Length: 101
Length: 227
Image 1 (cartoon, rainbow over the protein chains, first blue to last red):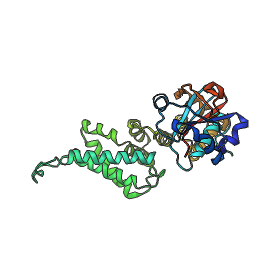
Image 2: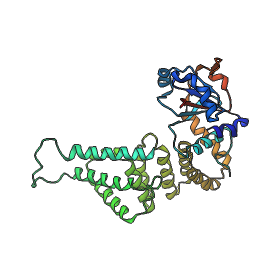
Image 3: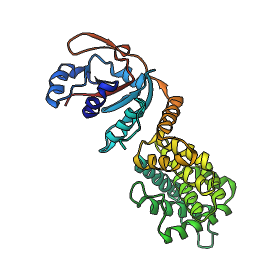
Image 4: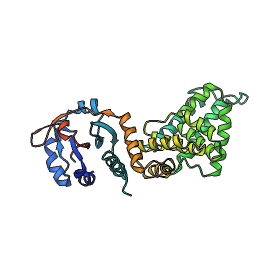
């Protein structure tokens, strides 16, 4: 995900990482640094609200939104190779072909 | 995901067999009792479903094994002899509908294949496979436009290279550019999308942030936790 963020940031991709465990809010900065992640982190989330409004009950879960804040896809969990689908989604939302040809 | 769906179907099959095949604490059915055709058909369906689940992921719809084809042909015959109330139970086996549709389209019976496919209700998460097979069946009966639409819809659910290859293969026949096809895929996704609820959170440094602060062409929102 970090690679996708760095590759397409200049073309209009923004990203944000929301911590779902408020009791670990103080670990977000050191963890992002340790993992070499430049995606900005956010804290202060209410787990009940995450569950009620976003259907988020665990991590990782990833949404891709278009310019109108419409949630185009939601990925639950992570399967190797899934980043290709995420990248394809980012690309078509940016107005590119889904894969480099 | 597909594997999970198949597993669920398989479990459903086992549950059905358990439910209808034997009763707790009851005596065995006497040998003179006529066999229940519906129960036999269900057992057959579960058996074929089990064979399908053994195929590698992404290849189960190919049905290249002649033995499996023969098995399915027998199943179709059995299905058509079942009373309507038992046929409705087939809704629990969308995998079998897909297998039947694939088989029939390979045998040149496109319309019949399509009729099976239209009756399948895809489970959540398997919409991509559903529309991919639908596209192939529609191609067999030379309905190129709806076939192309099915491939676009399939790709809108599963952004896989092999599905995109189907889109690219058919696009020139319909004088549609790859760029236009990608735009159509995005349009399909936008039509079924939901508005993402706003949020009011803060950075680890304590600065307030809302969804509007991240307005862009594309926003990737990842939920995570450290560790």
